[in-house]
Length: 297
Image: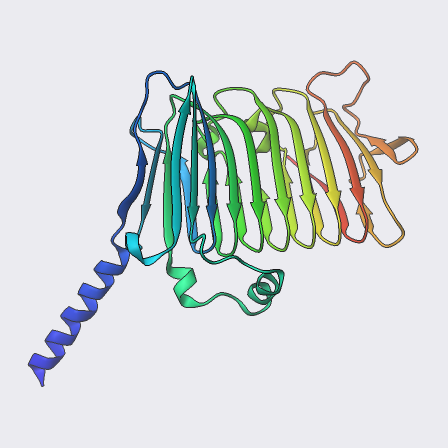
């Protein structure tokens, strides 16, 4: 009996180690001629992590999955100083709207939860990122990277975007775009993106935008909310803010007490003036959902 128990214990340990083992799946080598990388990345399910890597390779993707156990397409094209990378994981399984609703209501299977994808980018190239998530969760740490443009779309995945250790974008970003269908997206320290334009498109999901760190550039934030929820955090002082909202009788809009009305559906905080620099200029539209502004120190 003791021998059987020992063998069973060894089997459990071996199984745990094999599940947690992460192997390199895809890689794109460095190219001295390339200056900008256009990465189109789509993943249907699992946990996905994106962050700065330690190598100079343009892309490294690791997973605990066997290479032949999931559908995928992978291609790389270099034209002049641009490298376009298209990576679609599990492209053989398209997710319908009904599946998205089912995942939000009843959760995902254990198999889908256990999938892990780790994506590493280099800090010596500029990127245009186009990221598409189906179900599961995603954690995107952009600290220390050079991002020209960022586009994130979630079907019903929960996505966290931020700049860890207060490492700002190494270059000025043109557009930070987020589209939320049924999932949720939390963006921490958005000021560190140095984005000139922020675009938010919310269907039935939830989006949180945090602007409470120091603002280095003026930003125009355009948002459209269907039946979802948009939560925006702005600093109590030091940052001028102007808000214009087109609403309806079916929606809910709540502004901080420090905002005052200066025109038709137009509000400003006490830091705002017409000649102010580093202004956060919001142009928002809501149908049936909610928009809430809160202040943080």
